[in-house]
Image (cartoon, rainbow, N blue to C red; front, side, top):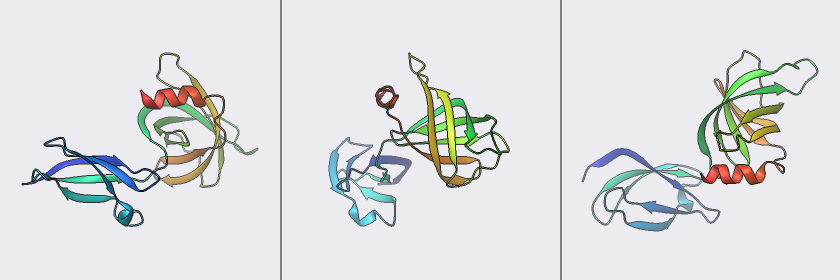
Length: 160
């Protein structure tokens, strides 16, 4: 009955319910995780079969897919009007996270324009405006301003 080193991810729905699957026996259980919403997002669990494991609770409103896509961004400001390099690290229906590969200063609240291609069969071009929400070292987390034109292609991409 040893605790696994692997962390099992579980998406939390809008009703604060998560579907947990035991990594040992495969038992699937839907449980309320509301008590962890504003505190711990990583919890230990024990299955009926006796297996102990760790669960990483994901309270995001949208599924976030990890990617590695080259692209460019521009700070929407008269003073900073050149394109800078980035690597898209994760993407969802509502936002994007990227690694800033240039020395251009980006701050929370900045408006950016992003351009990159998805690695799907159509090589869909995403050319969108975003608002910077969070910065951690070189990582920049943003929220899409409007995604109407690419929404269908992005939705299919996230499901693949």
